[in-house]
Length: 315
Figure 1: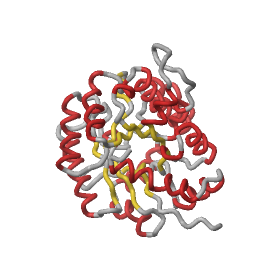
Figure 2: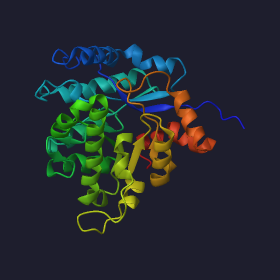
Figure 3: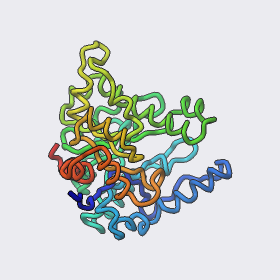
């Protein structure tokens, strides 16, 4: 039987909406500066964001705006910037209904302020999920500062995309290994965020909290049970209930491992465009899913069904 072309929604897409400027690259080495200048040009280009949809490669994108792309060298973001980002993301989604879905940018470590902005973004602007960072300095997602945002997301029934950051010490330690070292550091902190949420009991306490992580965090998904500070927490059961992972890299073995541990209903198509992903997405995802023996229903769940269910609040 011939499997029809997949309608793919890319859950992992970065974009800087109109009026925002990427972080300067002048302090980067020459080769890295050229690489990031190319990425930055796509990040601010709305036509580039839509090109793969218009070509038929994608059905839609789920867009986020990381504050890390806007921060100064000390990591600071201008006051009011996050609210302006969310206003413009909502306008972007309204200009392209059904083709662009936007996640609110939220500082999960800002206490009640983060929760208030999340409520505004969902209730007033109509955004259906949020983008948060895995850590802030040495603070992880089980910190009291993050609890208001996590509680608000659980109450609203919207997903949180927990995205990697560059952990200062580990990134410095692995910097000599180039891009591989950077990805390893970022994947590690993404995994650590899950350790914090499971080990602290946060996922148990907030059973309606749904988390999406990137493929580099996959190591945590394979944690044996039981787990946690008291040794009595069934990590795998919590992961299968509340955690989703994207397909960044489109590696069949990693997608298969995620399905085996989380279930096919908890894997979403995601490419990390335009930072990691290059070239058409649909054919690469389709080939990967076919190669691990998924049927048409399972392929469509990963390609778009799971994302649509997450964004609808029907987890």
